[in-house]
Image (tube, rainbow, N blue to C red; front, side, top):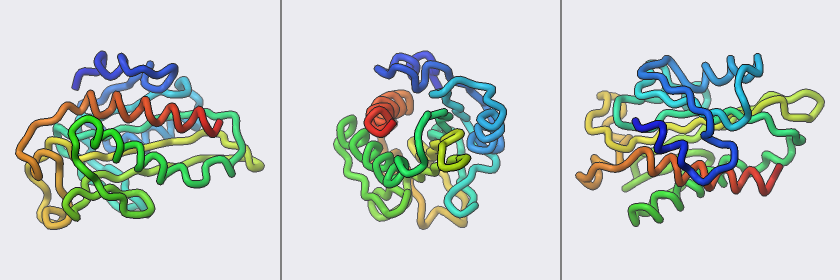
Amino acid sequence: MNIEEIKEAKTQYIGKHIIYYPQIDSTHKKAEELAKNKKVDSGTILIAEEQTAGIGTKGRSWYTGNENIAMTIILFPDANLQVLEGLTIRLAQAMQETIKELYGYDLEIKLPNDLLFHKKKICGILTQCASQEGVIQYLLISIGFNVNEEKFPENTKEIATSLRKETKNIFSREKIIQKWIEKVEQILNSIF
């Protein structure tokens, strides 16, 4: 993964600092630890080439092999909790738009936080925040997106897919991340 290319995104703060892991248990878990201790700047992204214990919705596991996107954005917005209502769906719409604009493919949103391609799961979005007296302490936005994956574990191969598996093409993870974080920053600027 070319981290420098991602940093070229037209954003003001998201993705200007990126921490890259060849392998990690979960970018989300690591981000939570860093956010609790305020060890990073707002907009820092954690990206992993491979996750051994990725987290999905309701504590489910999320498989991340190589050539996919596994990342978490750490944010410290000075805002009240209620502004987050509807955020996850807007983040999913931003990814839907990203893939349509870059490659012309239509992804379907499955509420509350999944994206499907040809009726199979291709992307999951996880948002989590900590708050105190209604004020956000930190916000984590994690995404798992199957981009160039060709092989899936037995228990997911019937329900999961990737862009490559469906189209036989190879896709730029960097371009997808770049365009998506530009859209994410626009969404966040409209609510914070």
